[in-house]
Length: 79
Figure (spheres, rainbow, N blue to C red):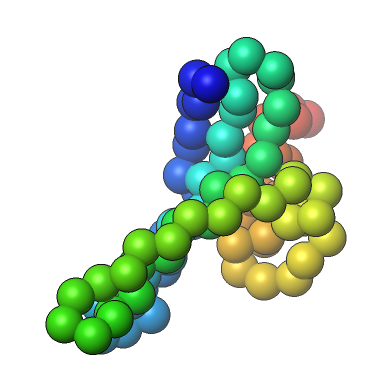
């Protein structure tokens, strides 16, 4: 699978914990989803985790990442 991605939100939760949200396109199928990546302190290092979230499910949620993606989508529509 070949993916194209666009990061639309990044936050640092403090103490080295971070999260990223990217809009991803599967070039083979045309499917669009949200990729949520986290890096959290774990023992003496960091634990990275990745989740794919269906676009509709993500946009039905509430929060800053959803607001940022809605603003990005809205910016694509010209007056």
